[in-house]
Image (tube, rainbow, N blue to C red):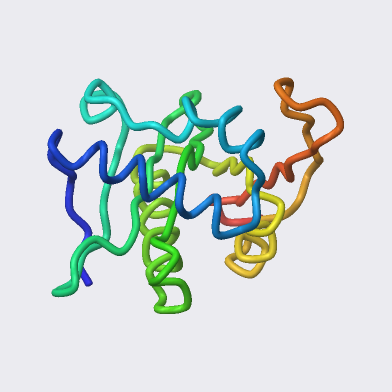
Amino acid sequence: MILRAPTPEELPGLSDMCLRSQASWGYDGKMLNTFRQDLTLNPEELETDALMVAEDKRGVAGMVQLSMNTDTLAQVKKLYVAPNRLGEGTGKMMYVWACRTAQENGAEDLLIVSDPQAAGFYEHMGAVLIEKTEPSPIPGRTLPCLIHKLRAQA
């Protein structure tokens, strides 16, 4: 499995993968339509964020998008594994890449606003739940907000 930058031509397919990944967790049509814009990748993101795809001989298995919110805070904006590739270690590889890249860029903390069903994965990888945030488009639904401390604890 390798990580590489995607090409502009791949963005529609990656966006579809994000939507399929969400649907595989059991999200209803309203939730998917509400977050469709957030799950869609645009060409300008290739220039402004660290965006990588995980690929092996069977094709693209997942994608991860990392952004620097401030000098010391990075955020995993998207991390999706193709539904038929879950359990193959792709998510772990991409998350480790996100942590290392954030640290190399000076981040002390990595923020993740997670799908509720994926929060356990991030906690397993070392992130800590700090709050549950309510996404404004759908009142009453909450998303776990986690933080991964990248700096060594004194």
